[in-house]
Image (cartoon, rainbow, N blue to C red):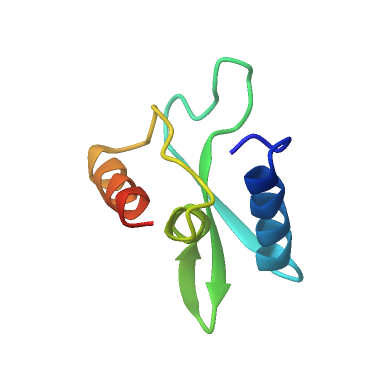
Length: 87
């Protein structure tokens, strides 16, 4: 959601709390890992009790994110869309 909306602010606060004192790892899409503005496009992961956790999946599960038109792989897109529909 846009940051200017109440839901956008909720997503921002949730994300800040989720990432507080966390180390993140970025996994790019491979070739073409930058968008048309030159920004890095990547999956974001944290590690919780030794297990990698997808930040995108957590945000989708909470209804605080939407799947973008461009997702790195078909399998990942399908999983993300399912999470969005279930949120």
